[in-house]
Length: 84
Image 1 (cartoon, rainbow, N blue to C red):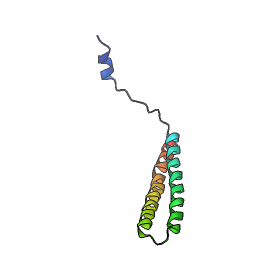
Image 2: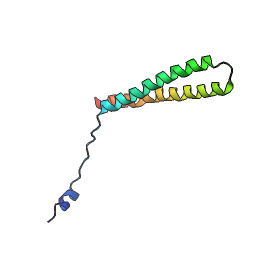
Image 3: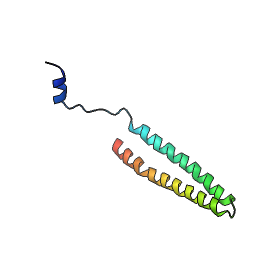
Image 4: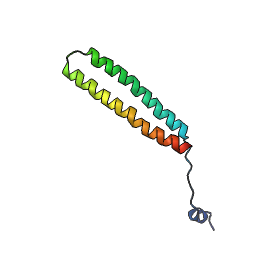
């Protein structure tokens, strides 16, 4: 008999090679980049003057960075609880 029949009856659980700490580190890295971009965009918004198109662009960048910063807190909390 072939060995394929045995392998079909047994369920093989695939192990993930990615550790949770590396995922948490990556999410924190993305958050730190967002903090830097947030600071640069706030400074740009202050320095741009009265150009409405540039102000809209900077406000959009600020909103996206805030979403990334606060949205990144959810998976960090979840993964920290999962790793314990």
